[in-house]
Image (cartoon, rainbow over all chains, first blue to last red; front, side, top):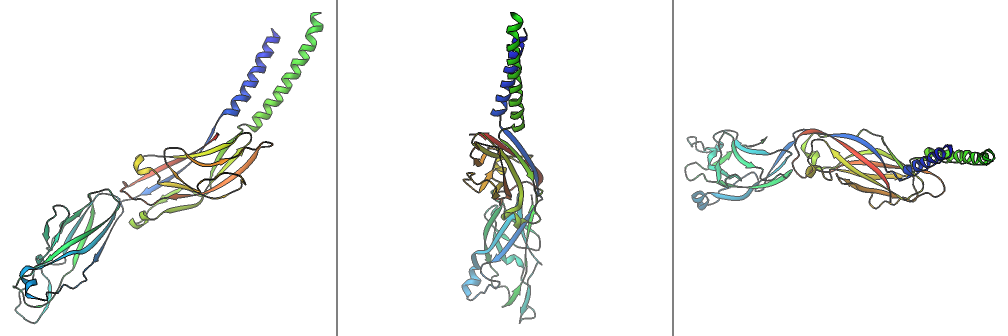
Length: 167
Length: 167
């Protein structure tokens, strides 16, 4: 009986040693990533800051400037880009003291929402939305300038304000 | 007759048990034969403060030390990462390990930079040590790769699991 018991102990010891040799071992390290809502927009004027009406045809038909603006958006969440002018009319440097103030609505920009031109105003208007989940997107925006013959010759200034908001 | 027969057998078995006990204690001292441990040398916490940072890699230099104990078998060390709250398509290849130095003269490192995902990726292979147990250290930078798609804001924790297996 003692003999049998001893044999069992020996076999148990051997089995234990074999099991240890066949195991794989793990180790774990932990960390974290904090990501807040992050957005940025950069606007480039691809045709410069000054738009000139050099001939009568430009007054008749207006000036369509393809890719007038390049907007580069970085956002980790869905977004909307809106555009507005700094005021309802241009500030003007004109010779005629009775010249009519020119509204900023003579400028329109093509949106990517309905692919239509949107007339600018002093109120914010939707212009771009993200249509993919790309973190960085580059948009080129067509613009149309159509003052007609109503306004006196001179230099007209306005500021365009682009606003990027998370949706 | 029975007593004179049992005595040598008992002595033999006693000797055998002592030998096995010694062998087993040696095995336990060496067990596991192949072992990996990880030490976090620099806390693995990433955070962003602006959108542009999403486009650049972030690096925690000298983030980890992998220590391996090698004896009888050729071994492979694998790494995989698990995130809490981050979908697999967003998390895939977000983190990478970059080997900076090692004490092993004969480890086989196919790629010094290993992208991490939920699937185990081979980090290195270590040839066996025939005569004696060897201890080697491998030092890694942890890289948070540039983000290309939108990623929801949040504080994500991750764990990197290292496994050493006999090849």
